[in-house]
Image 1: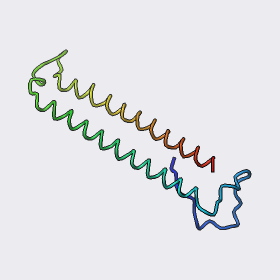
Image 2: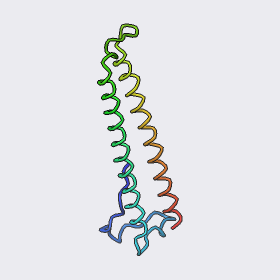
Image 3: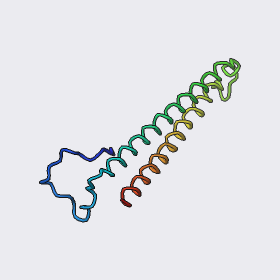
Image 4: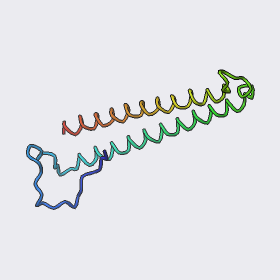
Length: 117
């Protein structure tokens, strides 16, 4: 789903859906709310992406700095591989779930603000 600002070039011939005629306000409050939502979603996405990249790089660097992990085997598999397999993927899933919850919270705040005005 993509949230965009209301079109300014929409003709007057199109009628607003019934019960929502109050959505068109001359001071463009809705536009301000939408731009605020877009900025907050972008800020959230950039923060989450940067955090994930930093955590992944630190994880890989830590594994690279401890060479004994490659020589230690568990069920015939090097521990470094197990750490990558069972460390990075849960990190990615956790980051994805946290991002989804925060983005949903941002959109719920937007809906609450837009319904109040």
